[in-house]
Image (tube, rainbow, N blue to C red; front, side, top):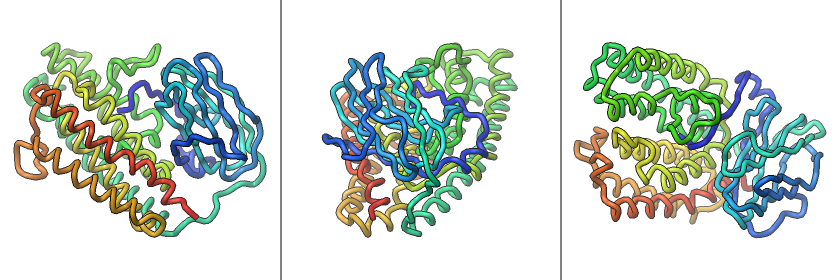
Length: 381
């Protein structure tokens, strides 16, 4: 789960009519000549233009604030067209998206929380995407099939978990908790394509927005491991979890998934693993973090492998490096496995010492750096 994320999504089906390509993000020390300059600060979000032609839109972002910020291009109902999280103070980033004509907002979210400071953006003209490699479209279709398979396989496991909660069987619910999350964690590279499902099912206590009710897996995790009880509220939440994930299952076919969103989502997810999940924050009560890590890596690797034929034509050295780093990270994760390959039986994360956690973080970072270049290689002309 991406901490402190809450997308207010309304009509999921409208996304296909409006969105084009979720943008690729690359670190940049220089502004592009035709880019919209965005200056983010603690209380400001200044933009150099309010109108731009449809097609490829580039934001050249500078964070002059005192805390990390997030910059987003948003539809009027707050659905995300493209975003870049964790832009540190004093740093520059370039965010590129292909956008159709319409009305949008550029939002800066200091501390990556709240509504943010916003500026209107009007995109003019007929717009439309430039032609892209047919292999990229095949990758998207194959990844959508993969995500659908994960959703279809997840529902029965979630029902086992929910049934145990509803019966008040504490030990059975604990046993079913981690397996019920694997399919969701594999699809997290594109989790925000499903709108408000992510904050409903996978928010941690420290990721709640003002006024947001805490629901989902982690609320139930706390009840099972820390509180050691299952009451009427938990039974109701278990039923709601099944309902939300059934909704997720139905949304896969209509979700906006693009080559850029696959590549950038995989990179953003690994950034989250390295900076947040590796600290033990994700499954802080159950300590089943390594199950989530493995599923996250598998989902990111699936996105990469489907995009690899396209990327290799433009940057063979990059794909060679990514192959190397994925192999290294998987081997490291496997050293914490306590069962047969594929059993998803891992060491309890509270037994993983500081040195091992650092080694995990370093390995994830070593992969995330070349992975940040994947989107550019996929959309290269």
